[in-house]
Length: 638
Image 1: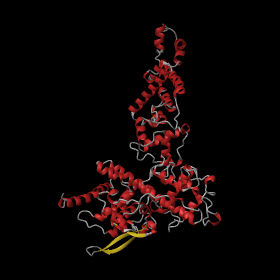
Image 2: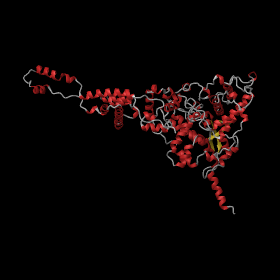
Image 3: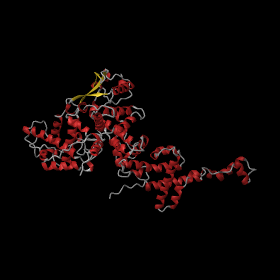
Image 4: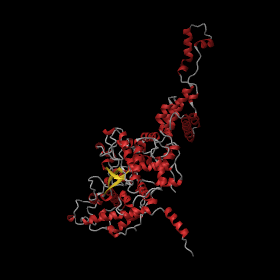
């Protein structure tokens, strides 16, 4: 069984510097802020006093271990309780005591100086004690003061309360803590209960003071707000290397680059401008480019993910060029996807610039393994057809059985659960980020858009349309044009209330509240507005930023709910809102007419109506209730 890291707290040079200041009577608050800010606020007198008592007890214990009981007693004394000066008699009292009343004042003063002059210049009892304590502290510091090391448990250096919270968040050591900070950035502390911005800043400050000893540096990117970082700054965080890094950062060793791969076709007949496997993958990905030009489509990202995993595995695990993989290798890769090593797995929130990025989250489900093998089979078919390779090893591997994907109740919220979420929108403190997140939740539920489709939506994609409602009244509605999977265009209805809300947000930001105004044409519907008004072009909200914001909202909301609802809402993601849209639209609330199947199919962008109809038949509770009534009246007899 693996032992947990030692958590007995250690003394560092800051503890000794602080206690020297205390012993000398210097301003304790200034010394605390300079050396022990990590312990808490200096205004918390109980905390300061308990910390001083703990340090003194540690000093005394160290002295006793060295068989120095006198030193142990010495460091436990509070010198401030002793009088600061030695009380001397006045000149008149001195003359009277010595019988010098008849002498001149000058003669009395001379005698006084002869008697007390040396003593008056000698240090007081308190000062003598302080000097002895300072000598003891110098000796103890040389003996017991330690520098933090990357493998140390956080509990060795942080207060127990801080250490417990950080350990529960998956950072047991200083190494893991610095990795988290560099991997997430300035707001690394979000999502860790009990760690706010102030405590986080103190932890980073302490790590920066000791970064030479720890041997790890807090990156510049982790000191700035994300919005102030340029893409080049993030791109420089992880250098190119032959390691678990994204495709664009991966350096393929020359001996494994596939320029002489075992299954390479005659280069003279190859139709690709690719001298090695990496360049061949790049050409394959380029062939999947969407009609939008340089912008990477969701299809390209999905294909890159699978090619990336295979390339990394082939070089790092199999020690083979991609163009030397055999059917046996592909079989091994399939098993790898089903049970990857822990070192290959990381949280999906870690973006590609982050040192914490990993190619997998964990073992893939059979459906995901099947999809990966299909995509990679397509890659090798492309390479074979372009005469880059002589065959396709993925064609020789049996795909996992295709299983029907459950929709509806499996990944959708009930009407009641959606009402809980809806009621909480707008309840957080009013700020730009909270309003943007709330708008995103409303738009995703109302339209059923995919995450990438929602992020890409612009005001120019909106158009008004006149129509007659069910009562024959002329009305003006809104449609949002979307380019979805397979570059297929569709238009999705949008509630007028969401358009009005968007216009109000534009007005808040100093823009025209008319969403169709020329100045708003290129503005993303979920734009990251700043307070600079129309003069500052709003940035686009990233897929991962939107996902994390909604995920965090759901997690916090779940903490307030009963377990049954909390479990479902805790699991809810942006894609759950899409499923919830479909499920609710097709069923309709009580007294509400269900939305026709073909309309929901269009909203979701499904190619087949059979896919959309899956939402109609997956509510187990409803099916069992209906059949129970049938069975009750038509129970089979024996």
